[in-house]
Amino acid sequence: MSRLGQEPDVISLAEILGLVSVTDPVEAILGLCRDRIDRWVGEVGGITTIDGLEDLVARNLHMVFEEIRNDRDFDRIKDVYAVGKRDAVFATMRIKFNDSENPTYGVLIRRQNTTPEDLDRWVAVIDCRGNKLARRFFTRWHEIAHRLTTHADQDYPVYRSEHDPIERLMDEIASQIGFYEPIFGPAFDGAMQGQPKLTFEIVEAIRRSFGDASFQSTLFACHRRLRTPAVYLEASVAHKADDQRDVNQGVGWLFDDLRPVQQLRAVQVVPNQAAQDSGLFIAPNMRIPPSSIIHRLFLDESVMQSSGLDDLGEWEHSGGKRLARRDVWIQARRVKERVIAVVQPVD
Image (tube, rainbow, N blue to C red; front, side, top):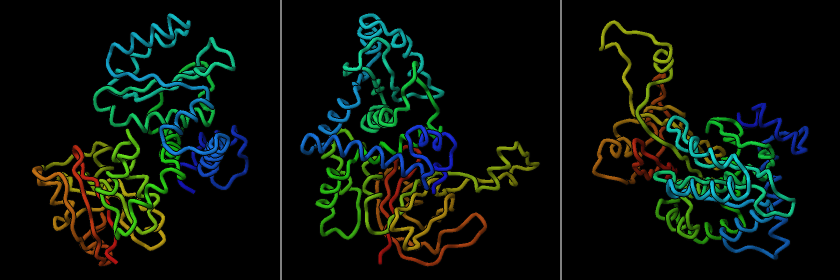
């Protein structure tokens, strides 16, 4: 069971949904969501596009989407819902969406003045301004996940931190149902046919078939479905674990040369199931050596993407231990202050 499955809020939600005494509440909730969607798809004789799936699911959940493309959309939404339909909560949303300290990408609101037959009983408001536009596809499915789990059945909108266990669970649901297997599976298999490795070019080709899906969310879906070992990682400068604890506790250093130095590390590591089964392992927060293609790409701001061979035997744990020698093929891309990469064994 994952750590997320041990969170009290996640266990409580599973119990609310009638999933009592399950081994893994996360998998149980995912299964419940998939079963509901499968049933609706079966009732209409099948769905061939992800946009068609979203329409079908939204109709069954009595929810609609409102998107904020510019500040004028706040006034439009206020006129439609707060003034026209007497739902006052829509008049004050702007404050939350403009909070730079805790950015809000979307919120699901249950309207107060509706009947059970109204198709807009729930309204998902999606912020598509600026950099938030890249998350549009994922945010829409995130709000669908809230509605699927009935966790939005309250009288007021809830704004949580992205690190909240329920929000992390909704992300997990969205990452799977947004790339619905009966649609995504054939697209993935067709793109991978005859290809020995998953590449960013394959991911991009699949992404285009899913309209507004972001590159990174499509990459996660491909990585999860890939039947050969692969590790997704993100690299950025960071302290080793012991030094970071000292920094967090406010430890001081008498001399600057004793102050811990940040190095390029694998700050996020996600192996797929095949990597776990085969023993392909990269520890979180491992130091990435200068010889690695990831390190070279991070330093060279003139290059956005690179690929090549690496030897994991050069990679070092915080304690100084190295991984076993293993040749891997890495494709890496610069994304803002980080480098994202997919690591796959040569053999």
